[in-house]
Image (tube, rainbow, N blue to C red):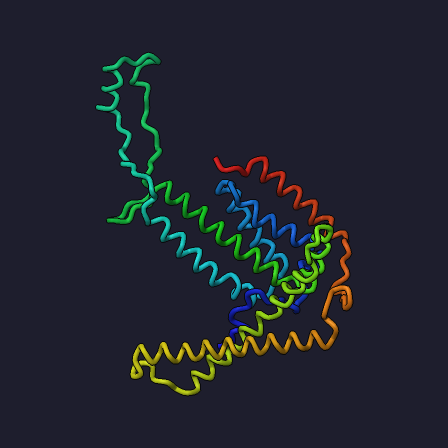
Length: 305
């Protein structure tokens, strides 16, 4: 199994180039922060709309099915399981659901005196706290609301970040963040060093997956009979594999550090590289206008009641 293809989390999609690739990284970062912050204290309708908007962006950008399936497939499975588990678990409210019947309940009202009209005008409402009850499985309105909030929040936070990394190169992320955080340099905060570390971390993800893949294949080629060796030896083997993985990753990090040192990356003032040239285009203006419209709708009708 090729981990670099089956788990493209945090990897950059170079081809094909979609319209999301052409957007300014600062604008895409604003949209990412919107997807991360807008679900806070939002109602379920707003959260479901954000999920639909993410799927719409993926479809309109014509991201290849292989990347879309691998990015969203496992997430939909996890979100679906979380939704089902949250629905059937106890909703946390110690309430006893009783049907609304016209009879003894209304007789109690007449005993105390009904001042606002004849009690015969009162009709039972179709409201029912229990949505589904099959055996010991009970789904209430509160548990359904919790499940919807949790799964939409999980999907939005994970997939929005994954989509941002999928259509934005690490160099673009570094340049956009550097310009946005440039005022912090007045407070002696090493913004350039921090963002360079972030870039290296994003570039290091494929190396980690490659090392895990190579070690996994090396274990498979030895045709170990896991049933015969027992649990103790199995744990020892995987501890050795984990130790080898850490050693290989540290060796890769040391090689990268030496290569940067040879090329003069000793201080940002001595060796500064312009990673990406930022320029706002008409498409960025449309994206900013839609972002403002989205926040207006969120602040107007998107609050949780």
